[in-house]
Image (cartoon, rainbow, N blue to C red; front, side, top):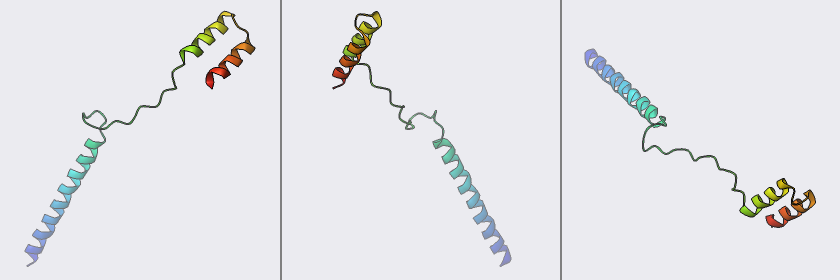
Length: 80
């Protein structure tokens, strides 16, 4: 009777060991970002592209064609 109990305990410990190895391997594979098919985290959002009109306004201000006051007023107008 004790030999049957000992064999049963050994089988249970062996099953728990296999379960532990399979679980650890599964977690390790799912955490690998280089695996194909894995869902990747979204890329950080980029700032909005500068509007062409605003870019032209900046260029005119940089070239000295308009003064600061006119630049700021037109920039406010473009943001509306």
